[in-house]
Image 1 (cartoon, helix red, strand yellow):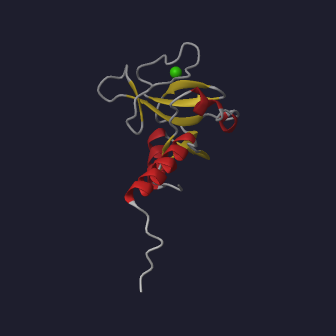
Image 2 (spheres, protein in one colour):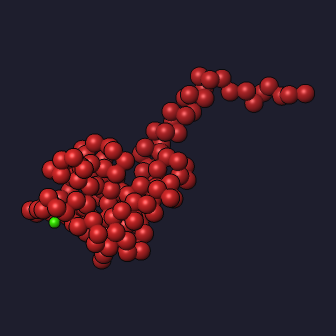
Image 3 (cartoon, helix red, strand yellow):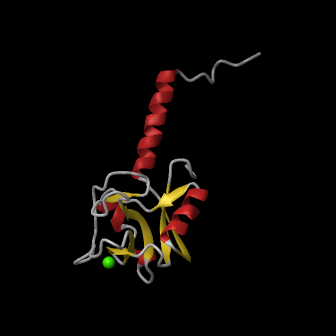
Length: 142
Ligand SMILES: [Ca+2]
């Protein structure tokens, strides 16, 4: 005989899911990958592992991430738009609402990818090989 005491109403379920997504939004997690790769290879590595190159929506998400990329440069998910290189977009297509460019950067329209070093971002040739900083996506790891 089936027990009905474990039944959760759709209303309660929606409430629980809303809390879960709110919690995961507040705790975006990042992973440092010390392997040297081009930007494209780094992105392929991310996608194969259900992650994305790092995305920062605001200062508070960014300021906790300086340490892993203090000694070495790390690719992040910011790249120039394919159609208009003056426009920057995140690897997942999200709108750019926060930036932390170094003084005088970005400085070259042919440098279509970006890396972070200490607490600043730089545009760079996508074929250069750097370490990477990844964002865990909602399909990965809770
Ligand atoms: Ca540059």
